Amino acid sequence: MEYFVIGDDDTVLGFSIVGVLGEVVHTREEALSAWQKVLERKEYGVIIITEDTADLIRETVDRYLFSESFPLVVEIPSRDGKFKRDLRELVNEAIGVSI
Image 1 (cartoon, rainbow, N blue to C red):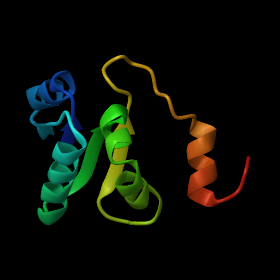
Image 2 (cartoon, rainbow, N blue to C red):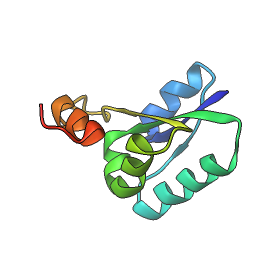
Image 3 (cartoon, one colour):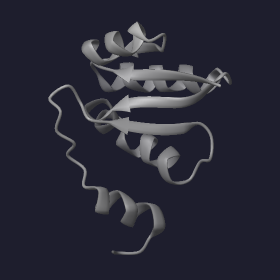
């Protein structure tokens, strides 16, 4: 099982240093294209995606975050280092109960 990262230039470059392949995206169309490529390749078990990139294709990402079992999707803060989504909000969406 391999990792694949989708995000901005700095993030993809940083992950490539440790051997993780990835794709730099700037638009919604590029993000959707990269997402589809990863899903077609069964060797990728973990998709790492920056928050800004995930926001471009939020419905697609959330479908895999909360309902699909494979691949595992890990959303990370974007290059500015601020994670805009609240952990409580993510848990509420995942389990359907407000905490």
